[in-house]
Image 1 (cartoon, rainbow, N blue to C red):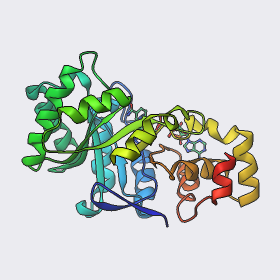
Image 2: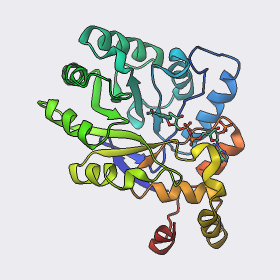
Image 3: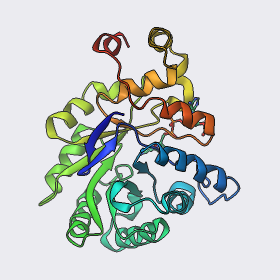
Image 4: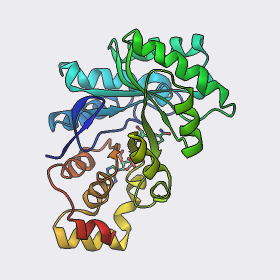
Length: 265
Ligand SMILES: NC(=O)c1ccc[n+]([C@@H]2O[C@H](COP(=O)([O-])OP(=O)(O)OC[C@H]3O[C@@H](n4cnc5c(N)ncnc54)[C@H](OP(=O)(O)O)[C@@H]3O)[C@@H](O)[C@H]2O)c1
């Protein structure tokens, strides 16, 4: 099993996402039982990073996470949620976080992210200043951003007084490798964790010929090869609602691509 350190905890080399669970822009309860049981499959396999957001299913995805983690020791989990860029004033951010914590059934988040940069970057300053207070108050352990480029990350870093920018959650997959140019090298230099979203490009990575070649050579599936590739520079957070999909994802744990295979991709 591949482990890494994140948010001060030992975590599995892949996490799980929850976009499209519990609805999209509004709550949809029809697949709750299925989604909870698939998340529990991941937890049983010792996957302990779970990504969600106030936006997902207008909060219902967070409620599904609460149900999935029931009975799992809180300190073994890294729970990530995100605040909308329209909620970065102190008043709105505090309200968003309180609601997120309530839906998740927890009294703290391991990591709270600004979901994407607001048009007015000054709001990032206000949001991060509030997040720094929330760290002091014990409501969040770490703070970070999502979808920020290098310039935006620098702005965020310069806005912080006490805390470090802990992570940037970005789209990163074998179909979307542009972060390898600037964003990932910057994060690595600055000690900012990289969380890779849409790591499967909705399953399309499995069709890449180079991935299929490595899969044939290693006896792993293309999906597993594509996820394993990402673990060298990030924590990928694939999402699956189908049990067979999650089982395939979990087959990524416990092995690594050789350096030769890694560079062939
Ligand atoms: N910060 C941001 O702005 C942002 C943006 C997008 C996503 N995210 C986060 O990142 C997570 C992952 O990204 P994503 O959901 O966009 O994309 P993804 O994980 O790349 O792809 C999810 C899709 O791939 C399918 N899939 C899963 N396992 C598969 C397998 N073994 N074989 C074939 N298909 C498979 C899933 O199908 P089934 O569901 O039918 O099993 C689902 O349709 C999200 O859930 C969310 O938490 C963050």
